[in-house]
Image 1 (cartoon, rainbow, N blue to C red):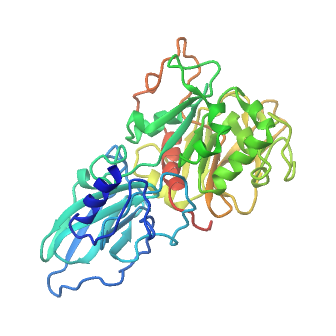
Image 2: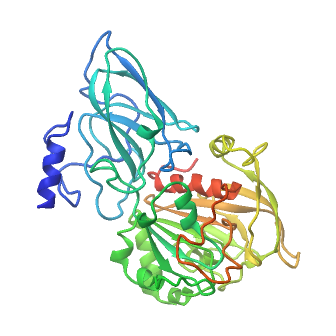
Image 3: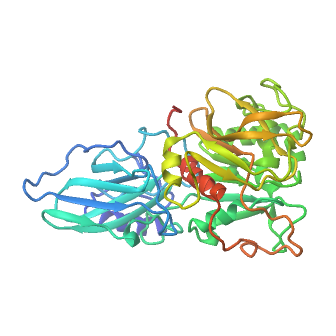
Length: 431
């Protein structure tokens, strides 16, 4: 019955044609994802009555701008996303007839020109973050959309049936708390499935062990993004299983996004298909996985004035006081013996780098601190040596979100926020 209800809603939505959409997102046509910028075929004309729509794409918190989001008015409402990861390459998917389309700038601003009057479905989308809002477009003039209209949803189906956020799994850790960054950008707590991967700060909420997830490829594929926080090597013994290593590679190759911080680097380094992309210290080790934990040598208490390697990241950070100056950011929260990268392959994008050293001073120099890479031109991987404000020192561990701070986001929080939207988006060739 639920599939029938969804079909009726889409069939009779204003501005839609009669396309059948089922509860699991199935259909005989492609589904709306990233779109080509520019007018689509069959766009109506209305000489002398064209209107310009403007606004700012915002994160779910209705404050932070989202760069690079696709904003479009389709000929019909997009279909539901499939219930599992997909190979989502930019330009390969999307409606065949998006009448007006553009992308948001670094400050989240967008403008759609030449829009004809009527009740129009406006879609704001960054990967599987998607918001549908109906706009009553007048004949002629300009319309400035409100922040409430242009923020991305806090949960799937928040306002409309096709509203979506990526399905997210987060492996809780001892030293990092990416789930709190997700909360800061506005996602509702129940939009994040938390798995236990901590030893010192184990949740009293009795979470499902992370080992359960990595041993179940079908379950992994239900998540668009998997975050693995910096932690003690609680379940890293699972990586000795060929099936677990294969599950990780197959999950990413199927279109999954894999976000790993600091001590949890083994989930990249020990997977044969991933390890050639990033070489970890101490010294070059080639394409083969190095000995476990060998790269945990970074000096404690570092405060690094790091260089930001991406101009749009610099421009975006510049909107937040204290986040960047002269293309640099102050990076803190390096846990003792943090994981040092040595170098990255030519297909890996280095976002942040800085002058660092090992605890004994034997290894020093400018090193990558945050990198991303596409895998098989389908999935994405992120690794960062630093992380958000740490969890260490919690005398009595609290269940999520009790350990999330309420202070303003730090520069590294902001950088990681930016990269959440980057890895969530469709896969495009690295520059």
